[in-house]
Image (tube, rainbow, N blue to C red; front, side, top):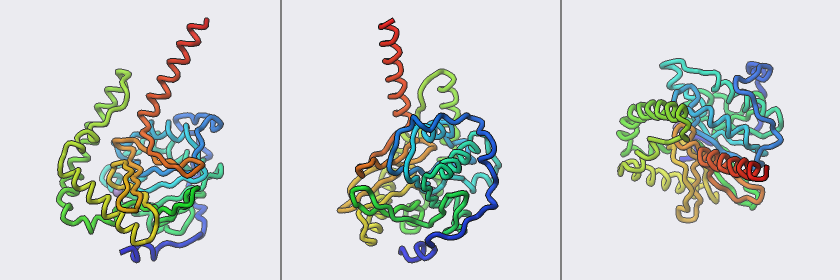
Length: 299
Ligand SMILES: [Mn+2]
């Protein structure tokens, strides 16, 4: 099963210099200083879907400006080529994300980009290097405490999930509709000063079929990882952040930036955790309010 997509994996290929000089330009949202960022050994993000209204670009910009890492994995569906083909949607904030990624690579972060099914047009560049961003079909990641993890997007298993294909098909239209609703609900909530809220995350957990689908998918991915003899697997694709042990294999899903707004991180000692960025922002703001109150009390 793995043969097909590992064959395309090449080590360090050539470098492509024709990449547009985005770094020379200024982002529309100014970058926060790099010094105050939380440092991680590794960060994984996926399913950003740049080029769609569903992408929470501002939250991702806030995340990128708040964290740093030695290695950053972009685990697929970063740009939504399918949607862009139908309707061109590319606001300045989406450029800002590309700008930040290129800038990060230039500053010395190792960036590995594993295209997914929505950005499969980049798979033809497997083995190449764009502005310091390595494009790979899949990767192995060794954690600081010596575990070996297989990193891939996860659409490789869609064929195995054939019995659930009708759900994927109905799901895509319904899902796109819900992403739209989610976008407007949150635009309104932002105006009212309310925190980010995920409609589809709540809906998904209520639908029995979706829950069964997710559980089955996680098992299929973990089994394939076990066949490769690794300790665990990191994937994306189904927009559901998760950490669970499936037999002896650690299953990690880094979630998405459409609904959940999650990232997976590895600390210096190898421990890993899933961050929910809206929750992290809420914690940060609560801490700032407490600080402001104590400053006011002292004055
Ligand atoms: Mn995908």
